[in-house]
Image 1 (tube, rainbow, N blue to C red):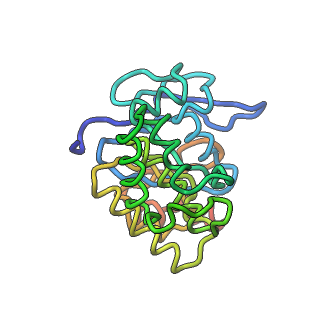
Image 2 (tube, helix red, strand yellow; image 1 turned 180 degrees about the vertical axis):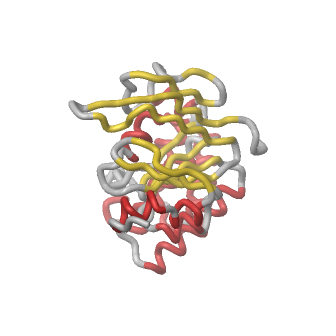
Image 3 (cartoon, rainbow, N blue to C red; image 1 turned 90 degrees about the vertical axis):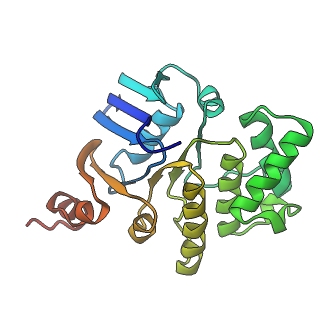
Length: 242
């Protein structure tokens, strides 16, 4: 799918939990694009991702996926329509093997059964670099492999759009580079990416656009280097006023 078709549209969306967390957000992602979202803790980034994924419902506004209104559509239906996500904290089924974890994604996320589900699970494991650990029990994995497993389960749903929530967090510098290489390959295969990340150099290695948030609002958007150098973002992160 070429860049041009809109994959995700967030149209004047707001969400409050007693206090506003996302306010009048307007945000679009073209099919085939890789977009990063940055902002300090509490900026509303994960809430925005939850709204896109269907884990939360907006108080107002509309969310569209490939031009279809999915504002009231459940998360599992959005998944079947091509939207997948990873979580900040990996949540594997610890008593199952790595392969069985990914097979759950292939079965329930893609709706496949039998040999087709098995084949998709194997492909997702290979894409994420976890093929050699397919028979390991998930509960025995270290953090990098748990993150890769999280990625594999998402890929097993055959996503057109992949939402990544701080997937590089907690990794060593070498592990970040390994993960970035995998994410770059996934994007090169045509998957649209929306990636929240505090490790900015990881984002800069993949994304073509960054949107910065603070207190639930968009404060900057555009070329990644320009956004990170902007006075609005510098003030939020560093308290620096130009």
